[in-house]
Length: 451
Image (cartoon, rainbow, N blue to C red; front, side):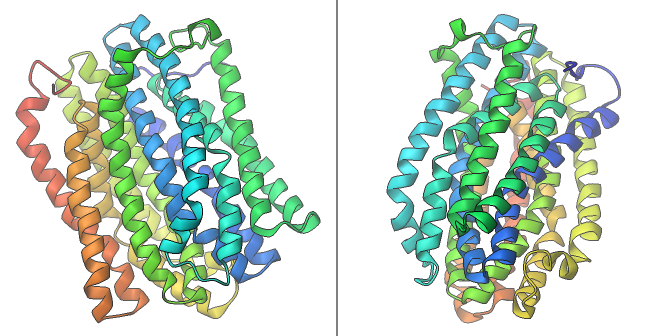
């Protein structure tokens, strides 16, 4: 395969940010399609109870995956900064450290996931009627954590060179395999929820394996060599310094979503199934907006490493405008025809009704979430990761917990529960903008890392 990479330090930013972000958006959407295919297959070929069983795991899976996706972002920032500063040896050490961190972390998360699976589902209030299927799905899914983490770290490595196409190509191949295996395990092997989980694990193994082979065959700074696979303590500390707060910030979303999901679970199977189906549509809009945040992080990292601070400011402005435009496009593509898209998952009128409520409430306000993604991305690109994490902890987690235990108890309806999303985004985005304005002098000083 011809190696594709992008010069982030020169040239027109608008076009390059868009070319960088779009494959990222499609990659995120395809990753989510793994889960969407799980939900659609069991919803169509088994029953809505199996569909609810798969969907009830979404916040749990997100919690465990998001932590290491954040750490992978830390690797992306460190590699990009090294490349921008011309420190190719350090970039290579970061690549090899990242590979081992992904595999080790994935194995640890598999073990932890297997231990906490049942208590966590019980804590979330998953109904007894679907608990056995939910538990089986989660335990099978957790066995694939090492390859899921490896794929995300490998993607971060490719992105640091401006290559977002290679992860996308690998995901397209594995996504096709995933859909085929879903149908095979459910229709032929009669495995229901456990079958679609197994299909997802196999597909993730394929995509991460393909990318690893490509890294072995590269001839540049990010080439992987077995003889150099070791963890550099100093580089690991820098990855964790940036990545852990970023991962915790994403985990805060997942923790708060577990709280919201527990409230959803208290409203019955129809609403659980509807929420599951709607989530697998609305999340596409999130990945589109998030892709511009990741583009902002990577471009900012390289230009910060090269000392091009004026260009960093332009990255923030342009990526923000592009994210806002994308949020409007999401309303047209996902919100307006949501009733018809939901039919892909289930034709039950109650499922469609409540699914439309969730999509309209969340996708309609993604423009507010764009503020969070872009300003967090810019701050992370400069090495300031703890601040956005703290703002998100207070704004998202605090608001959602407070809402569930106050407003939802007073107005016990699905619509009032879903309103927590735009409200929490509004609080968090305001806090992040204020934080960024306060840190501007530090960000654009002679020390671009913000130490």
